[in-house]
Image 1 (cartoon, rainbow, N blue to C red):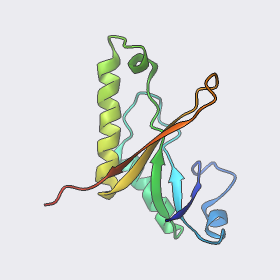
Image 2: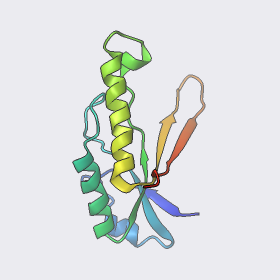
Image 3: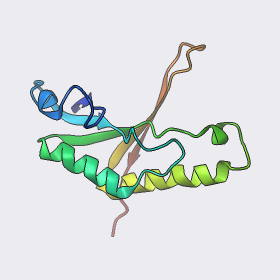
Amino acid sequence: MQMTFRWYGANDAVTLANIKQIPGVTGIVSALYDVPVGEAWPLARLRQLKDEIENAGLQLSVIESIPVHEDIKLGRPSRDRFIDNYCRSIQNMMIRRGRSSACRVSSPAKKHCSECLIWSIIPPTA
């Protein structure tokens, strides 16, 4: 088991240096919080996030919560473009590290429940 800590990126009041001081924490849970909902997460940005975390002596362990665009949820005609972008984001995560975990967290306030789907992405053998 790996101890991880959520980090909200460069604008987070809690820095990677702060997190590095927490005993036992070796991994970071993060996301690309500034990419607009429905847009694909660029591979270059994922690599930048990974590099920033690794340069602080930690590991990018989990990428969480790629937002699902409302057009997908509502089945609108434009949903296919957003589904393609969502799939591209997942593909970019696989390329980013070759193996990772992605987490989609949903907490509907009315249902007072939380569900978390975690995908383990394993690289294909060459």
